[in-house]
Length: 304
Image (cartoon, rainbow, N blue to C red; front, side, top):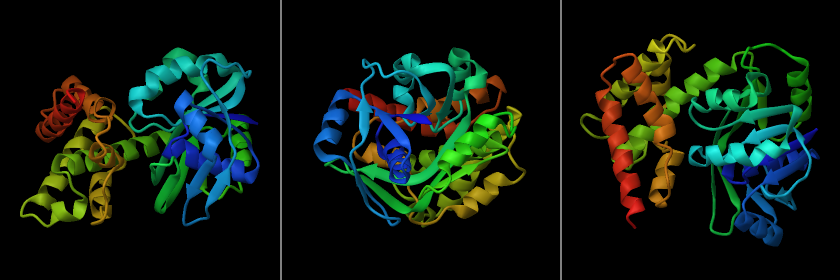
């Protein structure tokens, strides 16, 4: 199976590297700067599950290398529309597209462009970043990539992908209800990233304050109410389970991006959910505060 991974950042580089380690045919679609860096240093991964140093195959959007069987989108949401343009020449009649973006709105967009039959559901749970030399630093123990047919069916193509992913030194897991898993992650990441960026702190310091725990719980309840109004397939009480899972050392990738002075995915994550709140006439006071904070931050880095 020919696999194209769009982006060789912390997510795409890590999971693509693990597939390469197993011996799969992986190519990374990258920008010129990252291509040059990978050619000079290789793809380096530092992880509790074993360090890797590999020479990856890379292409640019302008290159032509035929079509691929599986395209994994691992870009940030603010690069999503460009990624759609970039992958189009590599999409053939039987190509399957697996997005790993945070959020949920990108699924409808992909189905609109490539037809629903080409699009799988997907998500990942991993703490990873890239250091100054371009190496991928895997933090913590989680390295889950969850995927499946949006219909929940066990199709021939999903079984083929499952065989390709099996035996990899990462948790590639097929789900029979990937839509529910994606909405659950959306709830979790919206709450966690919103709270940690609002207070510029990991969960532990927030919980130590007088009103911190109550604010965290209220934010998650507000988000869950909006998602349920959309008739999304989330479990009863999942928001309370997620709040209980928040440990003191938890931050968010959005907080790390903010600390580096980089762009954040506010529109795709919190902004999209606010549109759903408006659609269902739900007054989302906490979410508006969180989104306003993120917009203010975005405006401040544009002025630099």
